[in-house]
Amino acid sequence: MTNIAAFTYKLFGLLVTSDIKLQEAEEQTGIEKFDVIIQYGKEVSLDRFAGGYYSLEDTDFYFYVPEAAVYCISSGSRITVSPVIGADEAKIRLFLLGTCIGILLMQRRIIPLHGSVVTINGKAYAVVGESGAGKSTLAAAFIARGYPLLTDDVIAVRMDAADDVPVVHPSYPQQKLWQASLDHFGREANGYSSIYQRANKFAIPIRDNFCSSPLPLAGIFELSKTEDSQPALLAYSQMEGLHILNVHTYRIQLIHMLQLQQWHFGQIARLAAAVPVYRLIRPAEGFTAFELVQQIVNEIQKEEVIL
Image (cartoon, rainbow, N blue to C red; front, side, top):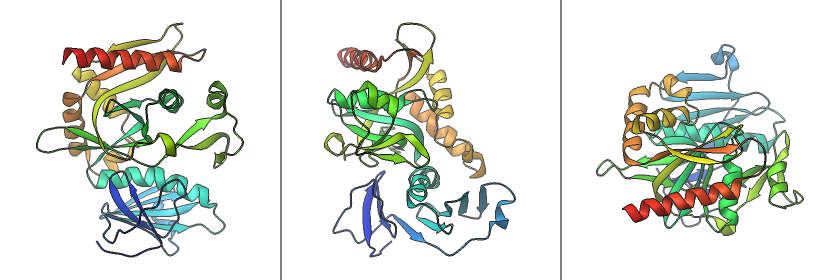
């Protein structure tokens, strides 16, 4: 599609034109053809939600966030944002770059996983896990050791139809870290913007340690907490890996609403066959992020020697 707009970006491998300035991303210039249009829309009736927050009408998926906006994600190519009067722009962008992007990726048949990705030796390695597992903190430890960030929160994985090589596309140069994580890294929160309605979680720019090129996905690590005192790294079987990829698909509950169950299962099955999946266990107490970094790096080096 062709369009000229105020702001243009490249996000998750897609060329985006937006009526809304996305402060988290870096603007692009000289682009006239776009994959996705983000635009403001007229007020939308809430009757279609029937007391819920989602509604599917043909190729239009509606998503309602109280005190923010009604979003309409259409055919993987357009996001229309109808703000609630007086809504905070930061909250509008939070859901635009999160859930809305996840839905759009599904519509475009791109696998969205929930986690962070760092780059090691020219390849992408993903850390997935439940909220609070420490994914972003571990990614920050990698960054501190000189390994660039590729994406945080939403992971866009494309599977090449010809050779089953999964590729991760970069998002935008920002991390979200809790105050406790900043404390562990000896960093002050002054100067960072807090995430909307989360006074102790901050948006951290990563412009000097960000990889802006797509890379092949070479490994996936599921991070979880344990009461044990030592971290551990274990390999999952392919079948176990398939389950892990299903559990940690971003906004997995929407796959059924979008009627994408068959596509999704086929894609994560291919991904589980193409990429090793590991269980990475960290103690619930103490700060072991740098130990975990070393365990992952050691495992990658061991695999490279075998290959």
